[in-house]
Length: 188
Image (cartoon, rainbow, N blue to C red; front, top):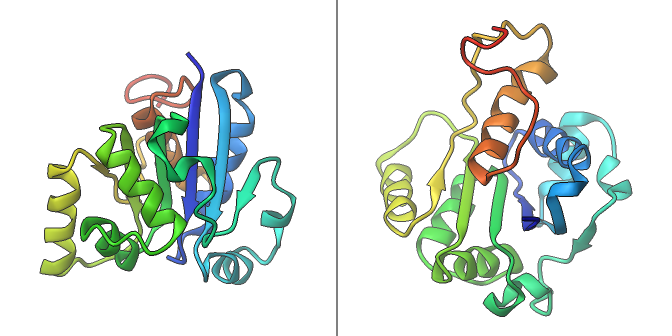
C-alpha cells in the first residue's frame, strides 16, 4: 500500500538528515502516493549554512508554504497517513506537544495525532532539559514517536553521510517503508 507522507523540516541543526531523507524517498517512488514538504521559517537558512547548497530549491516534491492552511494535509480528510519532522527543533516539539497549531507544520502534526496516524519527530538537540523531556512524554502519550537523531556505528560508517544515514534509515523503518540498509548483524 502506497503512503501519503508529510515531510516537515524545522530550523534545527541537522539539515543533512532532511537532505538524505529526501534522497532515500526518491529511491522508493513505488511506495509513495504523495509527498508534501514544508519548511519552517528558518529551515532553508540553516540548510544553506550547514550544507552550503540550495538543493531545497530543486526538490522533486510539492513544497508548501508554512503559512498555507489550504495544503491538503492540514485536514484529516486528505488521508495523509504519516508525518516526519526531520530535523525537529525543541521549539517545534514544544508547539506540537502543546497543541499550538499556528503554522502548517504544527497544524499537520495536530491532524496526524488527532486522526491516530503516524507522527515521527526526529529530534536534534542535546542535552535535554526537563521541559524537553516532558514534551517528549506528551508526544509519546499522544501516540507520536520520538526518534532522536542518534546515529549508530555498528555498520562502521566511513563518512558523515553514512553516519547520518543510520538515523535516516531508522526513521524510514519507523515510518513503515521497505528500504535497503545495513541491519544489526546483517552485513555489519
